[in-house]
Image 1 (tube, rainbow, N blue to C red):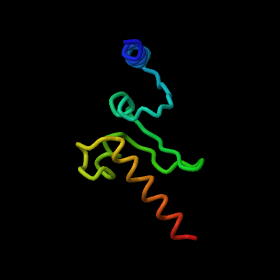
Image 2 (cartoon, helix red, strand yellow):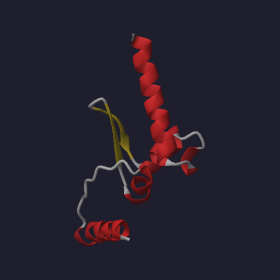
Image 3 (cartoon, one colour):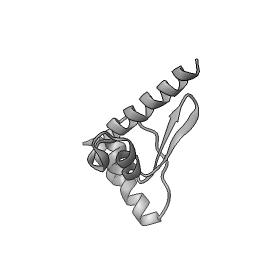
Image 4 (cartoon, one colour):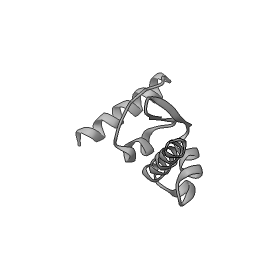
Length: 87
């Protein structure tokens, strides 16, 4: 209940004030539901910057209808493979 109230408040501020809200979360389901833009960091570097829709369309195994978590795991797996190929 408190988390829902929190998200409702943030959404309301975003709409009323026409302002950007920056948040960091490990709850990818919430990020998929509320974020308009997503940035993914890996070892201190930005490895993705774009919309949730673009991220799932390009990186989820099932495409745009997939979850942010699936897309995130795919990107991280690819990044780890890139790093292991170097060594």
